[in-house]
Amino acid sequence: MIDPDQDPEAISRRTFLGRSARGIGPLALGTLLFPDLLRGAAASAAAARSPLGLPGLPHFAPKAKRVICLFQSGGLSHVDLFDDKDELRRRGGEQLPDSVRGGQRLTGMTSGQSSFPLVPPIREGRRCGSHGTWISDLLPGHQSIADDLCLIKSMHTEAINHDPAVTYVNTGNQLPGYASMGSWISYGLGSENENLPAFIAMVSQGSGKNPGQPIFSRLWGSGFLPSSHQGVGLRPGANPVLYLNNPAGVGRGQRRELLDDLAALNQRRADELGDPETLTRIQSYEMAFRMQASVPELTDLRGESSAVVDSYGSDVHRPGSYAANCLLGRRLLERGVRFVQLFHRGWDQHIALSRQLPNQCRDIDQPTAALIRDLKQRGMLEDTLVIFATEFGRTVFSQGNPADPSSGRDHHGRAFTMWMAGGGVRGGIEYGRTDDFCYNIVENPVHLRDLHATVLHCLGIDHGRFSYRFRGLQTRLTGVEHANVVHDILT
Image (cartoon, rainbow, N blue to C red; front, side, top):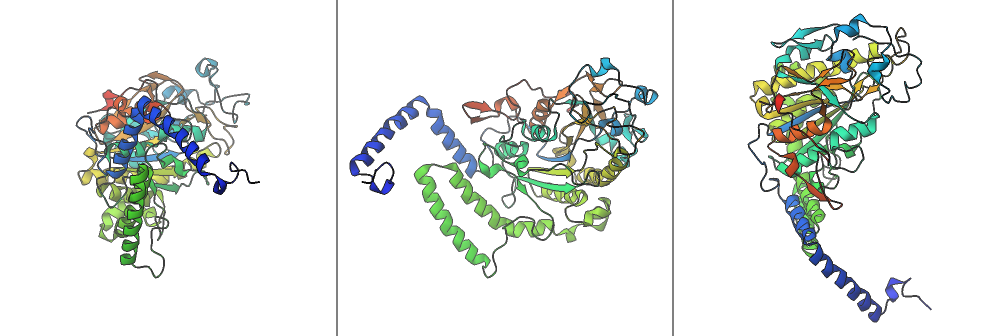
């Protein structure tokens, strides 16, 4: 005899009606007890449909309309590039005082060392710009734009290993599954160009540590936000977006007819279920159709002057390089993309610091400076927020014997440096200060939550009022702990 519980096709009419009836009561009760769930679904559907962002945003007049984040993956050495200390130069080779380290946690790569010898910056530097900002000679391009940069020397994070640290910077949480910063901004403010996504990411490999730390696509994912706000990854070469081109033998007119029929079916399903992800699917197909025309124009540099292209350096002609991505990033911003993120791998100098770090700096220095000047020349820097970020800094003491060319620096999250420019940020200043060993913060600490709050503020968003209901909580990019907008660095 067939058990109806085991064979769905053998369920009797009586069983079917009984099971259906049992589901109606809880459904009705749920709508009475939690009416915000239905409102939330409706709001999600509206957000998935609208390219204009949420009603009521921005909360106040923004200074920035768009963002480009130049993420230096691996943890760049603030000690060598931005945070010069006379005391460190005088005491090079001595042991880091126990009173400075204070029993703070080290990674497994140096916790077993019997000594912690201090290592000064591997290159000299100079005071640059009208405010005398110290920048390493490894970054001559940065030296030339010092008056445009706001160096934040007091960044700090609890994360000590790469994956949680990179995830934290990009999503506001050390755990995977949360929405990325670009997705939050896309969700809040929408797009200014219906033919390109609001959020685009690109990845390049540097000349330092090769291969660098892996970069996962979840770093530009939408997490719990409607998936229409996830970032789109651009790849180098003739096929920047996978599966964008029509198959052989399928013309654009045929594709349009297919999408129209598919949209009608999906819309019918969305009307039946109220599922915002079905509407997102319609949007993604339509965006892909429009991108078939917009992406080739985007990547065609023949309209750029040779002087502008050459200013990014010779590497700009190599698809997928950091230089090429910087120029492409400017073109994306120019076309109304709300958030552009460049991930550049190779900064994890545990070994061969004296060889790897100069190579890595050569990758990024000229293109970064060219990007700032290019935006400025076009009148875009004043309303474009540029973020030069990394997941943590490096230790002031050596990993390994400092006399050995294979020595390097370990991870250090207690204090490190980022910089910002444009978009309502004051140029030519330094904010925050570390001790004489670049090890602990002694003035104006800035947590990653504060960074996120400040970025949102530049875009006219109050981080405390910008949330999404997830797992019963009003979840924010800045999390549940206190976050401060760093008003002192803003115009």
